[in-house]
Length: 118
Image (cartoon, rainbow, N blue to C red; front, side, top):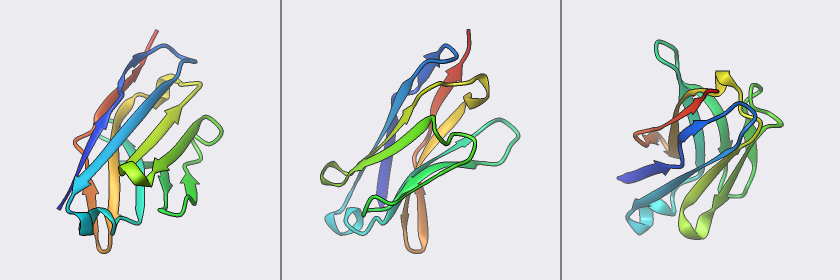
């Protein structure tokens, strides 16, 4: 099993910035088996959508709606993935979920709420 704990969500004004963190914990074998980590978000009544993912080697995939504004990074030594969110918009308001993929299972955190409001 892998546990994922997100932090860093909150209330921010449009145009502002937030940094989300997600720490993974579990057995040594499981942690070191994680290939892809990433962030997804979900609004009420809508499907969960990709925000960004990053492989252990650092290759990234960023969703079109956040490209150029959000940056994903990863600290393999500390089993942590980050999401730097800049130029936040009202439509970025959502619950953000951390994800870790160990073939063939997806692990999810409980989510952290990001609210963009003036």
